[in-house]
Length: 190
Image (tube, rainbow, N blue to C red):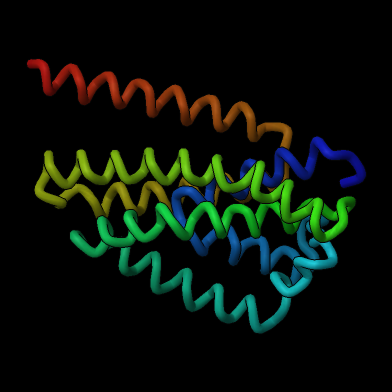
């Protein structure tokens, strides 16, 4: 990753995935760095993300988050909590992949690339979850949760394997979100 383009695309993919799940993208980044998969390297000041301790802690946090998100009401609380934690996690994930920048530059790049992207996806997720809770009394929330889990996982894999596809994937997700908002508005007006 000698250019700035690949870290930006990888950071965007990680940040968008972090906007859906706080710990899953960080766990995948940690595992990729720890086991030297996909050519993922971490910046010097973010090397701790690939440590064994971080890998274990992130695995536990991911399991708790994924299971808790399947429980109605708890999932909404996680969404509210995620509004604050996901931009931070995304800034860490995005900053970690800027290997050609110094520690300060990597942190700044992580904040610029990661935080707003995660916040946008987290806000969309929170809105979707609220609409699902209102429309189905929370019965559809576990299904939506599994879809978000899969989407977050796939987004990280695409970022690792084909980061040039991240803009296409993000555009497709924005299109689906726009169509979903229009559909909800049409149902409310009817």
